[in-house]
Each structure stands twice: as structure tokens, then as C-alpha cells.
Length: 88
Image (cartoon, rainbow, N blue to C red; front, side, top):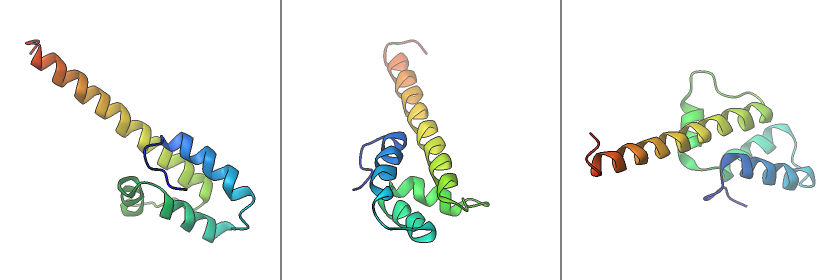
């Protein structure tokens, strides 16, 4: 299971379902989550001054980053279309 094109919210829910029966605990669960998530988000979290310390923090911060990234892309697209239409 990989995140691929899923939102982080979708991926976290799927990951939690699979993790419940996986036998992974604490540290190995975090490592598996990091390995399966999109690389850009993983890098941003790993380069952060205060890295997430628990799997729940990884879920929460990765979801927030993904949401912000998607909203930013939508805004950039909206502004690009406006500019193409001569709206400045």
C-alpha cells in the first residue's frame, strides 16, 4: 500500500485499517508509515525542526501539510486561469 494520488486523509484512514492487523508496533509502525507516504511530505516532516514523535503526530502533521499543499495548488491554478483570461 502506497499513498500515490490519495489525499493524506484517505491514506491515513487506509493505513490505520491495515496497521491494526499488521503486528507493527510504535517505532516500526512509524517507519512503515514514512516509507509508504509521498516523498515530498516525508522530506518536509523529516527536515522540520521538531519532527513528529508519535504515529499520531505523523498522521496529524502529514495531513496538514498535504491539505495546505493541495489548497496552494488550487489557488495557483485559479490565479493562472485568471491571468490567462486577462484578469491581471
